Length: 126
Picture 1 (tube, rainbow, N blue to C red):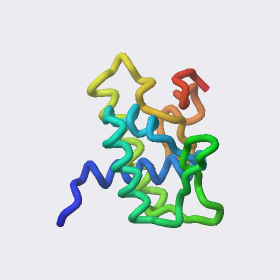
Picture 2 (tube, one colour):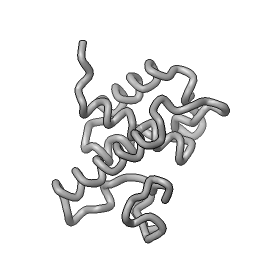
Picture 3 (cartoon, rainbow, N blue to C red):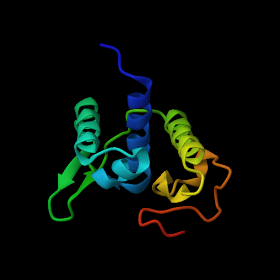
């Protein structure tokens, strides 16, 4: 069965967030892609099936954390491209709410706003 392009982009975005920040929550996926909690859980399960030794659930903090020494599925360039696609879609669909772009990204992705004020997890500016 073929995997839809949108699912692949979301998997890359999840992979990048884990690599850059070391953890991910369902709410990150819900906010970035405007999906329900069950759908966000499905994306996390799919990601964990593809890379089972990448993240583990931290029951105390109710978050998925990166397992030390684990490696991302996708190479850096693909993850950055996915991040940029998500940013572009959000800006086109909802230009007045740029905070929906999700967590901050590392300047290494080459985003035009790299090094500038950018949105972070709680919706404030970094």
